[in-house]
Image 1 (cartoon, one colour):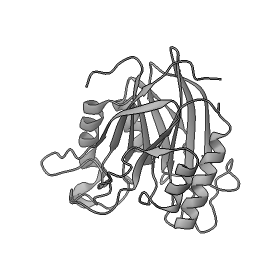
Image 2 (spheres, helix red, strand yellow):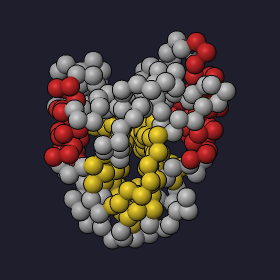
Image 3 (cartoon, helix red, strand yellow):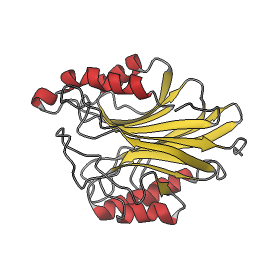
Length: 256
């Protein structure tokens, strides 16, 4: 597809924890597959989840035309970062990192959450186009997911209200869940609304009922294309999640 100046592409990708004991699907075997997918689709914005420090270094080396926002806990080698990589034709005007908890500025978690989950948000501008992009990763309990969605909505209130918004993430729940309803109630659509498929396949490439990786959007922005990237390489996959990508058409001058 030929992109126009007003078009923006966004991808969400759970890299799979790189220190996991995954045998033939270990990170060292998946690195070139991830590079191949990223170079093939080359999104303007890439939201990644479960990025260990060495995976982040790989992304920096692979996406040489991108900058990134997010936060690493460099003192913890098992730390999993939520990051947004953005093409250098975009300028980041503002960014914030949050924990999904009542104390978003310090490492913490909601009661009932297995892990300290995170959200990163940036305000970006290219020429006369302005957009807010968020990336997050929710925990497993449905009630925690619902509270996490409400927190993301609250965090977004700290950014300009009249900008279009894209949220990428692994939500660990299917559309129709309480978290999904929370986003819908706050004006968001999900790229595959009413056309859900598989995004979590456990390295098998086989269909499941798990469409847990979403791209949400709202505001004066129109989705023109969407894709679940099922690309395999000699039967191998870059992750146990399929990346999801969407292309949007924007209108200028929505900052403020």
